[in-house]
Image 1 (spheres, one colour):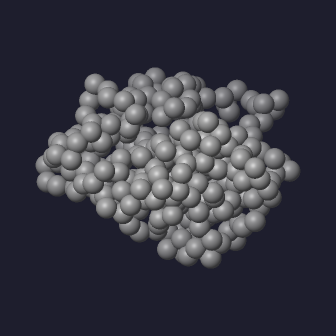
Image 2 (image 1 turned 90 degrees about the horizontal axis):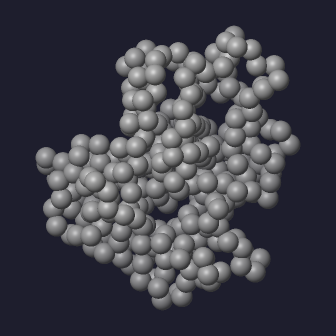
Length: 312
């Protein structure tokens, strides 16, 4: 999961001046994806809130790579190299993950699961993994892949584990948006633990939300009808000596050192925004500009509590 500690994206809501018509008529919190998801609807029904909750809970189970659940999920796939028939939701999630990793999100790789776990376990003990173990995991990634077959059949090839933590919340928000569009609902705020946010229109005159980034001198953006995806120094990041190591790992080198403290991506696609925000943590500014041009997204890159790159 992608949660910021030093730099956190958050909504700046006008609490003191908030009038009744700005308050959501339906509001609910749901714990899934290892974080608290918040649903705020300014129109619609309680049934709509319950449907959104159901989408979150279902995709949380499907994307779990740490434990078996009551459905066939990513954990199931990681236990075998045999063909496994999965639900259409999981098949689609794996498909978009594969497409994202082979296109613009070059440093996002759904086969990074075992490498990520290696770093997490080592950093818990304030240690850096042995270079031989890192090399072993990188070689696993190079020699592993996902085969997408007919009839929702998936085959994991190789020893590397699948990990969809960097894309699952964004995909879930895409599914929520599809549902909201089908109900012709436009006024909402769906907050995926602040690292993945779906903005509709605010129930105000101009419909814009003010989205700020903490510790940046009250810097804020006026946004609506978009996805805001953020990756950064997480609660699992550890400083050893003068270097901060992250759970966001480079699939080519095995390094857990990122180029930025945080990256914010504003897009019209939740899963792509999430994958890109992860990938761009390891990119150069020139690579960020190339991604902006090819994907039509806007990016803010942060280092040492300052913006080092921002889209026009």
